[in-house]
Image (cartoon, rainbow, N blue to C red; front, top):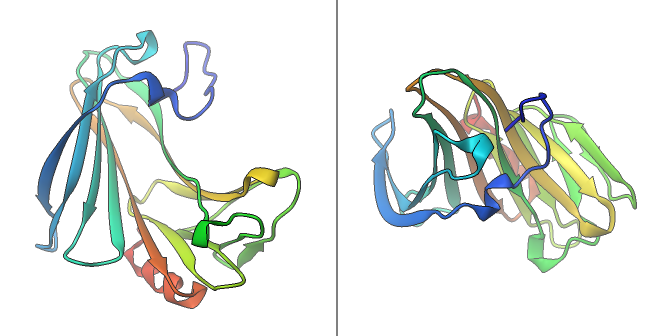
Length: 194
């Protein structure tokens, strides 16, 4: 969320907010019923006043697919700018030492310096030894995915969306996450992307 000077600041600004959890069930436009945990908070920090954050962690049946819905509701009478973000700190098989990051036609190998690559519809973090892959797919057309190598702290997957939230309106971002046995298996989930 940008401040009054337009600075975006650092991610994770909601870590001081208090979210209320509850079980939930949602039916999507295809008629699939997703169930999981929904979190909500009326935001208290000064720059967030008048906003409500809702985060839904949903899955279908016994699948390996997690749908994350991140929604900001504007309860004020003025437009609000926001950058929604989902940061996935990845450790396929519990190890991030040599995680390879992938997106449309790009592979970012581990380095000892921080680096970012803006991706396309999907991004993936793979353990090259086992092949196990965490894939993230944007489910919102105007969102974007990023690969982020944090040097010694591993390679990670991020999804972002810039938005202008109308008065009494809301903005939403959807990201799908899945764990697969291989990069090729993970790439099949790109079909969920918008």
